[in-house]
Amino acid sequence: MGSPLSRRLNKPAEELRKPEVRPIEAPPPPAPAAEKPAEEPQGYIPPPKRRTTPRVAELRRQLRPKLLAAPSEADEWRRDNPEHQKIIVDRLNLFLQRANLQLPKPEYDELREALLDDILGWGAIDPLVRDRSYSEIMVNGPNVIFAERKGKLIETEYVFDDEEHADWVAQKIVRRLMRSFDREHPMADARLPDGSRVHLVRRPSALQGITMTIRKFPEKVLTVQDLIRFGSFTQDVADFLQACIVARLNIVVAGGTGSGKTTLLNVLSSFIPDDERIVTIEDAAELQLTQRHVVRLETAPPVPGAKDGTGQLTIRDLVKGSLRMRPDRIVIGECRGGEALDMLQAMNTGHDGSLTTVHANSPRDAIARLETLTLMAGMDLPIGVVRRQIASAIQLIVQQARLKDGSRKIIQITEIQGMEGDSITMQDLFVYKTPDHKGPGPSHTGGGTLQPTGYRTKFGERLEQAGFKLSGKIFGGGMVSGSKS
Ligand SMILES: Nc1ncnc2c1ncn2[C@@H]1O[C@H](COP(=O)(O)OP(=O)(O)OP(=O)(O)O)[C@@H](O)[C@H]1O
Ligand SMILES: [Mg+2]
Image (cartoon, rainbow, N blue to C red; front, side, top):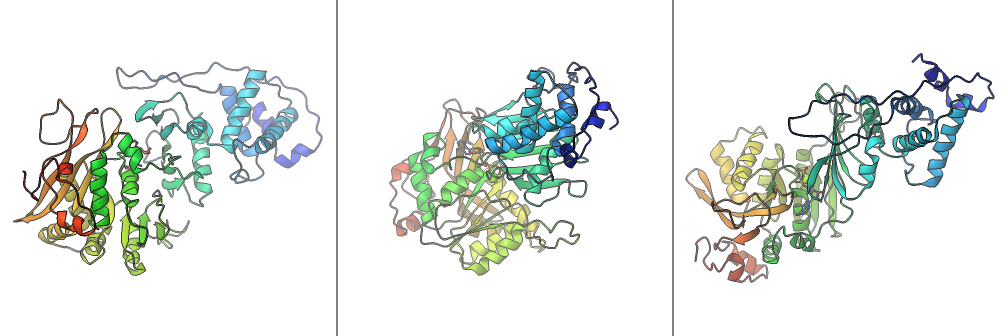
């Protein structure tokens, strides 16, 4: 950078201590903020953006690294800690003084807050990260940032100054975890210090530039009573699910992205009795079980720089390993690869009462997905064998969905009955209905309830043996298993 401004700022931190006399140069005049005309889908009006002036953006870009003795210096510092703020602001003032730069007060204030956000917080998205009412933040390149609040996804007024600014924050996120995010590692998974889950992708794959998806760590873990209160399901359904968990049915939670699978898995796991040994296996640990006898396992990325995957542990490795840990229950955060085969085998060989989630939009879809995932294990199993494994391993599929009004609900609870010829037979026990919805499947609009279909579970005896005598009313009055009364 050869501008007078950059020359003045381009001094290492040590030099700041040396006295120096320099002529005062007039700072370049503030240029009007040039908003690039965005290419937006027709009819959609993006909100006005909160963009820093080009001069503040330029100062911010140059000063961010200079106010730190080392890139990691402030990684453990806090945005809301007055002492940490003071260190940064003192350094900023010294820099401006040494560079003979006098900014008008509003511009100085803007620069100071911007730098505090960059160095102590998470840059442009810091307000969104700190505001607990946002549950998810999505950065689609530096200029478009969406966020979810109370189930509604909206485009926000925040923007990063440029790609380098977004990268500054991305590097800050991965550095703490000693992970890499660069051309060699263009995709990364990470976590914020508060436990929020982060997924990062960059060019060349992310065409709009750095893409971040942040799932906020819930301040309070949602409990079964919270979900009942939100109308996600009824007390009757909760009683039924609790009975199924205690009676050690193998259960799969199915749902689309962000539909609430992990939250439901956490709630279902909370029904596991305290005296059982639980092993949880996740890509990025999100489950928060309150039982004491829990072993939490998380996948490990390869050692940075290792070309042969040294140090890597996949979900599949962990599932296989967990079987030697004498688990009473295995809870797998999500089945998305060959581990499906190991899980089914475990379920079929005495590790019943296990739980997992799959990415699927209906129970039938969940079966198809499990078939595909099992075939991915590369064992060359005939499809008939795979189906039989699934039919005997899994007893219940609970379908979770994010509805059109933004609410998240269980929309279907389906039992696997067995096999008829080559196909798996299933029976819906509960289906979510809205008053105007007539079809046999669940409705996808808000304002309905999860209603019993009238079919009673075929596992009634098993539930009874586990100490649960559920009234026929829960199933809509049905008394005979597998048939309608
Ligand atoms: N029943 C519910 N009612 C209201 N909010 C919910 C409900 N279930 C989940 N949420 C919220 O929805 C968001 C997504 O939930 P969750 O992480 O469980 O989804 P997911 O399906 O596991 O997502 P992903 O596919 O990304 O793993 C979280 O912010 C969570 O707190
Ligand atoms: Mg999840």
